[in-house]
Amino acid sequence: MSASSMWVANAATISPSLDTTDKRVHLTVANLANALHRSMEVPQTTRVLNTIFEDKAHFVVHSAITSHSVIGDEGAANHGRLCLRHDQPGVEVFVYGKSAFLEKRKGFPCRQAVEASKAVARNHGLSYENSIFLQQSEEAVDAGVFHNDVISVINENVFLMHEKSFINQVEEINVIRRKCNFDVCFLNISEDELPLHEAVSSYFFNSQLITLPDGAMMLLMPKEVEENVKALNCVDRLIADTNNPINDRVFLNLKQSMKNGGGPACLRLRVLLNQSQIDALGGDVMMTESKLDELERIVKAYYREKITPDDLFDAEFIKDSYCALREIAKCLSMREIYDFSK
Image (cartoon, rainbow, N blue to C red; front, side, top):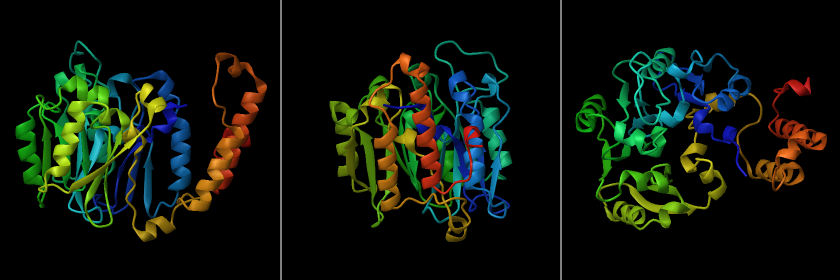
């Protein structure tokens, strides 16, 4: 079972202190203004982030950009960060689909406005030199690319993309090269190798690209990639190419989440912190084996195998939901973050 609030890639955009002018971590809550049901998440997300990142000497939590569908902001799903290593300064990549002030395009709607992306960059104190703004191609949007993490993925100095991801893609790649004072490994998947519609249906790019302890990288991919011959061939080619650091892949069964539009990357909200920032976090939110065990116990105790419309009228369902939330907050040592707990 899945719920939209678990897709933390749409919770916020985060810039590490390595990139910001005041050397604090900046977070801007996404307004999710494109969808009414998702925009309802914003107040609770804001409260949770303010509780975790409450130490103003280290963190700044910005409220969501003005909530209006023409100035939509979808958070980290349209943001990436290029760097040589995570512990070094980088260039932040913002991807948008439209301008709030231009005529509405035909076809699929664009969720991210360039005005929102630039407002986030200004709020975070990013400079012209360490930020770049890329526009999604109309072909990509019309193929169903509602977020950039459906058509490209960034990890450290690796930028994996489809050849039809962005407008003026070749020129934009050259701009990125000029702004980065390190070599960027651009990995391009052609339309012949993997047509746009199959890139979207397999969620090939909605993968988590992670750095391993030895410096190599691994792709965490949805099972749908393994089941698509062209997508699987692309993965095999990338792994066989010793000119890039990707040398492994793991396929994950996320069928329930995928049916609602969420793959591995939708569960990614990358927060880069140094030790003093970790020590300043509110609550007890760093994951441990014992904490995982306790969260699993809570899920087994209160989460239902299925939910029907009739359950929404059941007082016991509401009671179980409240109990689960209270116990999760207690497990994470977070002060009262729910109105019903007061």
